[in-house]
Length: 273
Image (cartoon, rainbow, N blue to C red; front, side):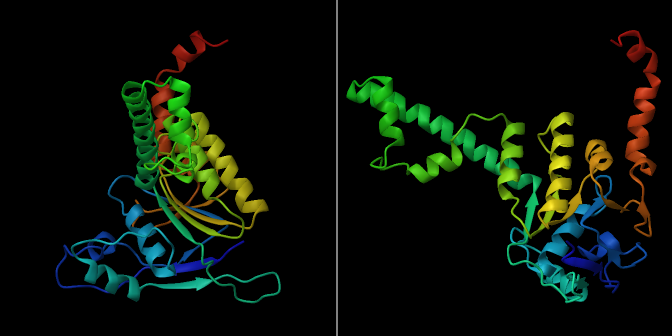
């Protein structure tokens, strides 16, 4: 499903060349971005891919978009100057941007992981204090920690933040899978953070299935070769002046990986099974 069909970045100029976010796109040839069920915004560090994703999120009213302590007035002005178009359903009727549209940043995922880790530390401390002060055994102390009568923690909090002892990568996968619901628009900023290459491929495969079978649309900022090569996506290259549409194997980042491993081809051949 395509909810957000097009997006046009503001092409207006300001006097100062340093005002954010005008300075990010001032040298770009502004053409409409035309979105697919899955669209990738590719670019190296400093290319503006995260900025663009946040601007889109603000324009369409997605939950999770960022605000800034300084310069928000210019950002709001820039967002107002941008334009977007919506898609159509199977009967040719214009659709609406889903109310549950969600912008998820890599920082959001890391923050949730930190909360889980903190909750686990609090649990250990609480259980230890009960054992020390009350003289109860560990089983009794743990039951008290998870009890509804516990004045420090509710069962809902425990289930949400300390349900299982996941690794960072497993937690990232769990958080993202829990966030994906049918018929929704997702803007993901480097969702592969904390994921191994294997899990990056698994996440990309899940996104492919979610877009195909659950009517979701994804706009993803990434430069992961594993995500780029697995996602069935349209790719825009923010490193080019025209923000050109490209194939994943044409990108500089992919060529770098290819040339790096090609340099050591003999070593791989020597140890192949």
